[in-house]
Image 1 (cartoon, one colour):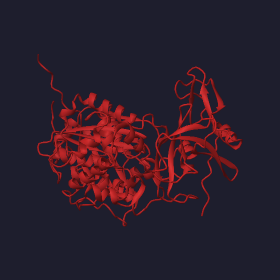
Image 2 (cartoon, each protein chain N blue to C red):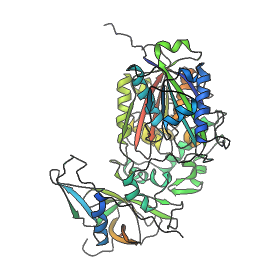
Image 3 (tube, rainbow over the protein chains, first blue to last red):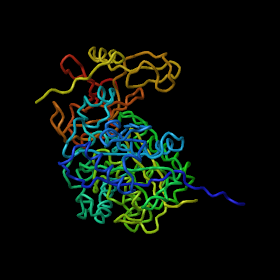
Image 4 (cartoon, rainbow over the protein chains, first blue to last red):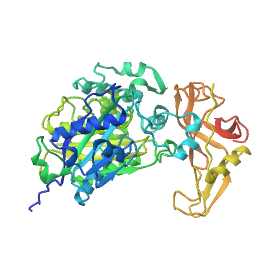
Length: 385
Length: 136
């Protein structure tokens, strides 16, 4: 039986992070968007005149267009938290396929640490404020972590397993010169760090950084005209949302938004889990990769913690995950999804400092808000499958 | 110390806060689904029906999950428990756990809880405490 070959329709041709990350007091939030955008344009040899589509989250997309001098024919301001940029990839692909624009610039910038911004890119929900914030649950560490004790009791997840996520990701970060934290960690270091919201210590919580990132997408048929190795979208990815009230999460042991988004991405790409050479799962907190592995179906429910603790996602493991060190060790601006995408692109270009040799397919999965939203992208360096 | 946040009340949620002021924890029930739901809205999140009615819940529940928060919050003295309570009627809601040490030994998952009300300015805020006994 002959099988028709599939070829990609959309490519990421430009990708870059801001020139500096971590502590960047000399740039405003808008400036971080622009710095990353100019770097991404330089990466693919385009200028702002070539861009006709703009997408960003946590910031007014029209302001980004005006600041950069772009007159777009297509805009996407989807702002559902840190996974917004992964959703933008999906939306941009649909827009290019529909002929709404030809070349999309997706930007992220966040002055999370220096706070050089006029507004914080929060996503206020009236009901979250009326029925949750009043209980002193004001910050992500006391909200995002709330399902975890339940999962520990119901699924047998242990604190040592949660701590091992930070340990393993630090091993990856050690390979990345641009990562914020490089020193090795032990499970005891993580468990004995400053308590933030029991049972979560500071080392189970993400960094707070300044930084930005940008991607440029166009049709795959143009991709070979660019100087860098093309990175293609395989399928259309996935997205979903459950909502901003953590108290109303349907199942405290599993994210519905993760399950729905992940399933769509796998089905659209026509891949199985064995096809995934490299994996990014947005880790705002150490339990996120555990939920992600389970909800995306890489392991059975209740096995995510042991899978990481046993070393399967560490350097040399069978499923390299969060190879930049993640939000826990690389950087976390507040909406980190763009940085998960950047590492996925580097891996597919073969240029990551923590390169997974021979990797052909990278799956990038993100969370938005506190298990509120989710988006998934499948990247590949193969031009047919 | 600054004051604890008072809720911003909307027309659709006024009955909930009026109920709290009268010492009642208000839920809504969808007639077609025969299921209670929370937070308040004038239709059922399960089926979209507007055939819903408010009622006073039993005020009993169990400790479903929590963290012991160490970070500052206006009017709160860390550490304090931010908890999820599963109500006898089914819905879950956020609360603090009062009249109880903010300590993992004292806060056991699934322990029975009962509602109490905390006065904040003109508002009564539902809170939960370990069940004190009586007709449980």
